Length: 111
Length: 111
Image 1 (cartoon, each protein chain N blue to C red):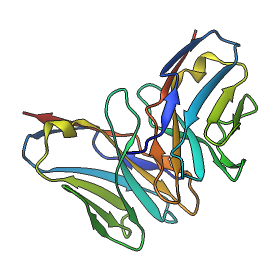
Image 2: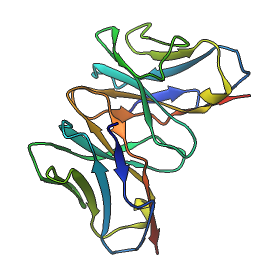
Image 3: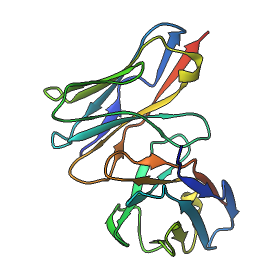
Image 4: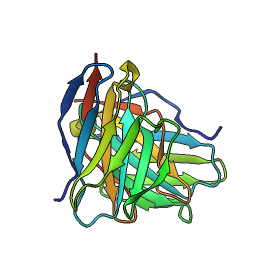
């Protein structure tokens, strides 16, 4: 079936370094992608989104890259801070408002 | 900043009992959702709601589940006869047209 998945379960990164979190999706019809951050005991928090007609979008310290050829999505966090420690989920949707979430990737920032 | 609010934050119920989880979406949003997250697993879509009716539901959302918008501000999820496997975090979300914004969740524990 269609699925969204993450390559690495845990990413440890030194404070100040850049982080890259990857996500593979299998539904070529997906047209909208979102990255969410989830801290312990809290709900998913929107970080950044991208539509399928784009391949790159930048926000504050974050960049999302979309490669439709290989169905790959990545989130880059510049100058990672302790507050970035969380689980990061990619999510996709296609033609409706129903999000399909990936399994999550734990980011641990080492001070 | 407007946010989605959910009550209660934690609900403990006996198996077979009915529970109602409550949500106040962001006021100008038109689309409402319920998702759930079993401990350690990914966030799963349950149902979406628009224009006072269900627009889509997942295979998880069986006859034991129902949603209602009883007034202009609340959005509720009812589980008629809870099972042990209903134990999870339940997240309400709302959106205007784009990305859904999530509440902090209700932790449901069925004993």
